[in-house]
Length: 148
Image (cartoon, rainbow, N blue to C red):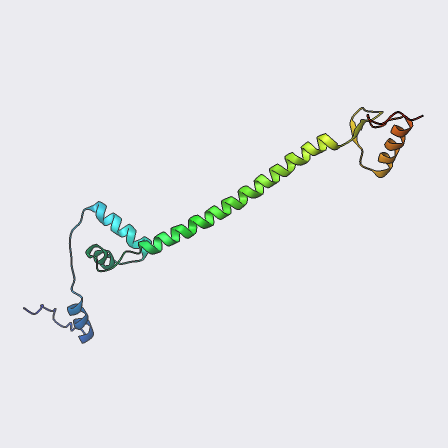
């Protein structure tokens, strides 16, 4: 094999000569689209063109298992976050709807004697006054006979 011609005055260190012998240069031309895809993949993965050539030859396995595991982990995290957010929103909406229905069914109100707006009976004094009034008026269970 012929020796490579060297420029005058330049001498390569023995380590460089050994490296170049064990790692020969390969050069080829590719369409611009292929080059753009390779350059993008190189930036995204941090791998060299040599690594992609080795994947193509089957010398190196592409990291698809790792990529799939990462995708699965990300999907699970997204599902959990979405499930939790949906649960909280549904719980809050259900609580508010149930509370509103119970309030409509069980709360006692009466009209204000001045403005006519509804007043909720919440204080012990108001509840006691209403109970006394109803007793004085003779309110009773429908099954019970009226009192004297």
